[in-house]
Length: 175
Image (tube, rainbow, N blue to C red; front, side, top):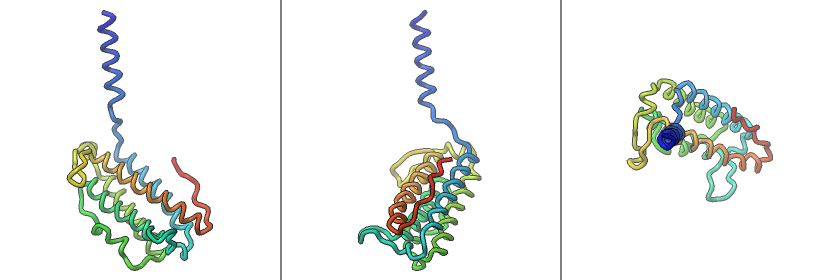
């Protein structure tokens, strides 16, 4: 009897620990809105002249780094949401206007695209299985998490650019 209770208890604990918590569309939107505001602070903090800053020859400029972030928000975001991207892959980073005002406009629009699409997703859609790049199988919620991870990575890289421009990066915003 004790063995059955122990086995059942261990089984239930394993099931509970292995279950991924379902996040709702409003929670996803809230996180993306927070991230958008944080990225805007980075964009606003960099002086106009810093948008062409390139720490080493093989690195992107600050503007290119942020436009790459926007390209991925649009492209990967579209795949995660299940819609058409508002721009072609790499199109934004290749644009000729790297002015502060234009980069801010483009990057903010990329966040709005993801926020709008994610906000319309149902729980069933978030759980729908997809294959990114014909290679990585996951549900749409996980795909959105990957897009979030990508933009956080590239925003984080721009901390170095701000420091090189003698600008103090914005205070971290986890909540």
